[in-house]
Length: 61
Image 1 (cartoon, rainbow, N blue to C red):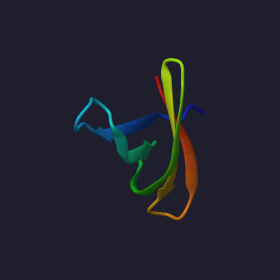
Image 2 (cartoon, rainbow, N blue to C red):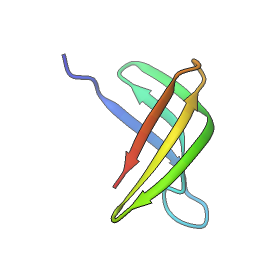
Image 3 (cartoon, rainbow, N blue to C red):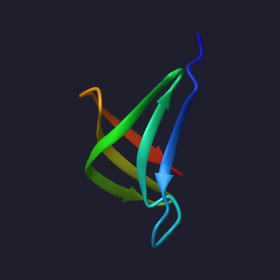
């Protein structure tokens, strides 16, 4: 089974500055906190805490 994943981001000073919501299939989870972020060439990573209490690492390219 494939799981559709989509992330909505806040675009402030720059596009896709930080994640706001995480869509996992039929579920929508609010990002409660961005706990950490780090950069590598061409990518930004976010460790986030969601409204259901789970943590995820998101990669933005």
